[in-house]
Amino acid sequence: MKDLKFITLAQIVGCILVVFGHSYPFVTQMPQGVIDVRTFIYTFHMPLFVFCSGYLLAFTRQTERKPHREFLKQRAKRLLLPYFVLSLVGVIPKYVFSSVLNETVGLDAMSLVRAFLVPRENIWGHFWFLPMIFFLGWIGFVVEKYVFAHLEKKWGWSIVFVIMLILAWNYQPTESLAWFGVNDIIAYGWSYALGLTTYYLIGEKLSATLKNGLPMGLTGGGIFILSCLMWKLAVLPVLVIGIAMIFAIILLCKVWEPHTRISRKSLIAQTYQIFILSWPCQLVVEIITERLLHLQWWMIIPSVFCVGVVGPLLILKLIEWLEARTKTRFLSTIIGK
Image (cartoon, rainbow, N blue to C red; front, side, top):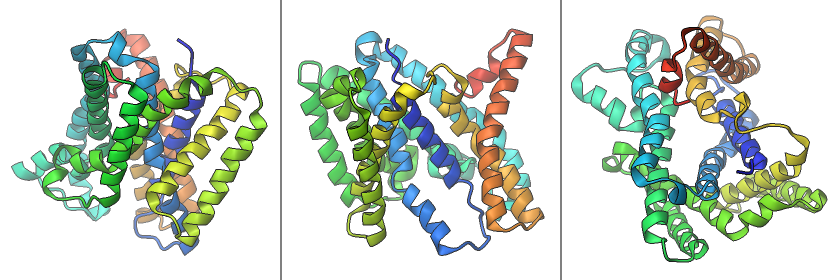
């Protein structure tokens, strides 16, 4: 099966932006311009990640190649197993350091239940993404396999995209739908459907050729600059900015694709593992640089960001080394690798 390097690059961009967004200090004062950069990134970094997942569901033709049970088992192993196991491992450390983090961690039954079943209240702040992408993938698989089995998929997913976009546009999260991440599924479902729609509408043409990268690069760059300007002027809704930025990054990654040797099987492409492992690494450095050393923001952000990228890569290398020596895959299974 052909390797989609431009989607891999887009996933890496999304992952790096997520890590950067998590690199900001908790309480240290920062200039408004620095805060604005993160606010802008948050309009599209997670939708980009979700878009890529939807695009890959269509590209890999999961519904044609796998039965429902096998797909569900693989997704649960990759996403839910790390979510529950690493959350369980993190309960006691986070409770011990709750005073340093200025967070209240309850050990009563209801608090623990909510920590696992209300993803936004999870032990690890960024783990809410894992159940969301699991359920979106499951829903996407079921809809494509059973609902769109005899329909034109590009039009079916286009309709779903429009419905989900309108829903997200008008939706206000509620406490009751915080359970199992339903709020987030509604908020980000449009970007998953957009990924599927994009593949079925133009994916084959986009994947096959790049006759002239200049128009595509200029288009992507133009969309990027225009999106930044429109966001700053606050003349377009956040969802429109998010869609525009997704396509700007996809186009720019497509232009860069011939110049990279990156493979989806390479270590740097293991974006889910980097995502999972980044926050614990960043949290340690955040505590040291902000709470103990009281450094300025311009020293904290680069330090936390670098550790958020390099730390998971080193851990993955260490896991490979340990498993090669012990001939096991226990640790890889825990992190969904």
